[in-house]
Length: 301
Image 1 (tube, one colour):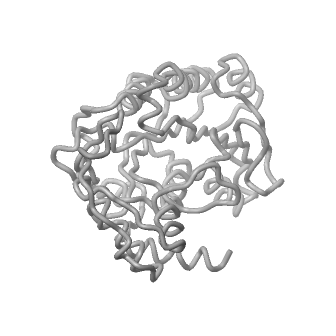
Image 2 (cartoon, rainbow, N blue to C red; image 1 turned 135 degrees about the vertical axis):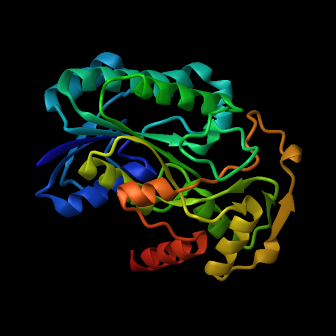
């Protein structure tokens, strides 16, 4: 039985991965590390309320458990906040990864770390794993640093880079693009969405499955995980309206320059996902296909 620690187990990906691994209780012993109370709505795994930014507390807990794999889903991902609270961003996005690496060196465990399309400058789109990072924001920069810690280490690691993750779990502390657009349109509210940024949104269930496959196959290196359709964020919002049968006339396009955001965003990201298909055995859908699966899953719950 594999012992798996999931840091940030209260988050969207964290809860989704807990749920996925617990479908095979005889294969995995799951430990969730997060701050505050367990928000997953389930009691059938070991939940550890922990301050991940406390080096001693984190290392002590991990050395006691001695996991076979650590999946690090914890991060400060609000891009503008990272620009303002640089120190907090560094601790959670960089230092924590360094501490995980140091523990992994001692107990010889596999570290699976989540990264982002924001490590790229967004000049070309359809990025491969081998493309050179060139972040435009402090957030992107912190993620590059975290990747470098693993790339320069001797441990077994997997880096899963992803884009605009969406989905729904039991108790959510924040929303995501699909839920937000859906809620606004259901309430008849007009929304403005940028039409000059291009992304490939990622359904959280796909991302959780990628984490599980990385554990099972002991896959190492970098993998790109997203849907396989590059669309403007405006088109993404329109597609959400179509699938959920809402009024897309409420969605108005605007340009990024009018937003006055603290952090610069890459104009065009998107991934070449062929490596994850061949090596991890992942199947990637169009955004619309994933959205319809998500819609069906929502109606089941």
